[in-house]
Amino acid sequence: MQTQQRYYTPQEYLLQEEVSEFRSEYRDGEIVPMTDGSIDRNQIAGNVYAYLKFMLRKTDIKPYINDLRLWIPQYRQYTYPDVLLIQGQPVLYEQRTDTILNPCLIVEVLSKSTRNYDRTEKFRYYRSVVEIREYILIDQYEIGIEQYVKQEDNSWLFRAYESDAEKVALATINLEIAIADIYENVTFELKDDNPMPF
Image (cartoon, rainbow, N blue to C red; front, top):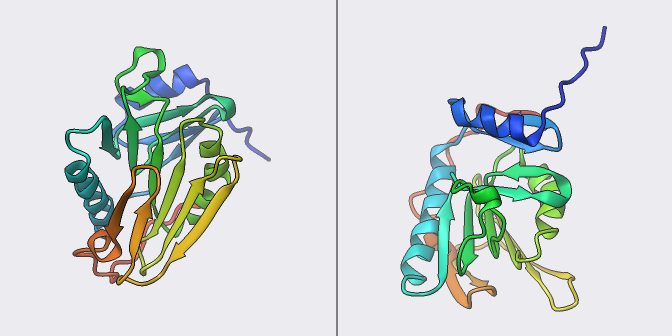
């Protein structure tokens, strides 16, 4: 006998998220628990955030990490990007200080259970946000970075990086970050022990 999946409204999701011990994403009626973090994933996101925080001080571009939720109205999605940048003032969704609408750059650290989703459906959802001009995917198991930069004709230019001797040129903010700095203190020895099928 097949169990019918429950449909949640965005409002029900937000109420549940406020009291939940664990974060979840919302996918057009479905509440999906987020994968557990790893030390390497946390280190990578922290390295990127720290670099951006330092380099962008005294500018109108601010980095945020992990806990700031993004609402994507076209696809009815709530997500928690690992790192995001906002230029100018954050545009808040319904005046909620935990939910924004206008990142210009998003960074996701890939896990084994989410990497295909991050590269496909999630990227499609992100592309619907007009302000997003750059999407960076970082592998936590080996040196590997995928960069997508929005062009004037709305196409996306792809570049891959596979050496820690390279630098990633962040086109949106005209900065370079060394891949060695992104992976500083990352061991590549820890495994993803809590895969969740998406």
